[in-house]
Image 1 (cartoon, rainbow, N blue to C red):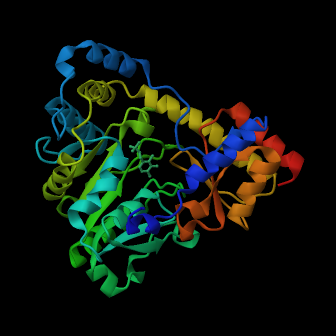
Image 2: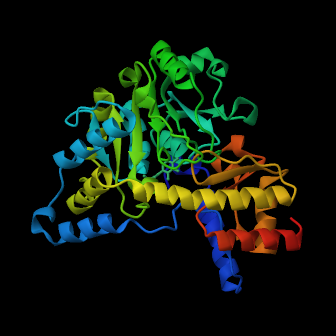
Length: 382
Ligand SMILES: *Cc1c(COP(=O)(O)O)cnc(C)c1O
């Protein structure tokens, strides 16, 4: 009944974990879900207020423009300038997205021919792989290893693969490893992209979630980046707006135009009222973002300290709201955690073969719940 390409899709592990979790809840278990990459914190009130106001205005009730309203694209350009010192032409170098997943899911349609390669980090956000498969491209996994600080070793990519590659996905701060980029890496990636005529799509969903004074860069701050790259950012993680579906692609105008052309044929833009609320987020006060980072940081410290006390070896992340921990067998560990302690963690293998041997904890639950999880782990001796 289904098309052949459906058979190539990996099983969506996260849907399966949801099923197992639902079963536990039906059995009466008080499940602590440290699996979800969705902030538990509310969207800041001034953004919600602006949505309500804009939703009441009939001017916002029509089809939106495809690329995003001029005011939104202007606000994105201003935010990029203020935050990263990156200059963008709002008319040609900014595109509104229904979340960055929208951009990631559609970019291969514009640039990948059947059989050409897409370079995908492993472990990585699963949509890099599935969007490649929908475009009938071939996935080349770039392993992210602890000994390389979870940064791909570009020299390892075979020449014939590099020559046949159209897109490289990168993502720093990284989900799921919580790694940050290192000085010089973005420069090498630009050079590699130039040498092999590859488009770089940098996913910067976590640029604003960082700790201990670390500030994540934009890929577009790199010399020459705008010749080869676009960057996706989203309001989802920055302003606790995962449910609102708004983000942006910025950078090289030809790449932006290609993505825009695909999307013109797929969706009809982001609800104008949501774009107006997003403008108030981008141009409004940023103390709400700092506040959220303080909340995650306290949770991080609680979890990392607790895990180390239980005998685990684990790094304390400088960015993202994830903790990436090595374990012997990730599926066995995650299964035991759910069965014996009622705790959901994500097995690393769900992010690709490079994630094997790790589990991911999300810091999207309160300090109280994290402490409860730690004491259950101690009780059952996982
Ligand atoms: C959450 C996430 C996204 C998707 O976010 P949107 O809600 O679609 O903007 C994209 N990339 C990574 C790495 C993520 O963790």
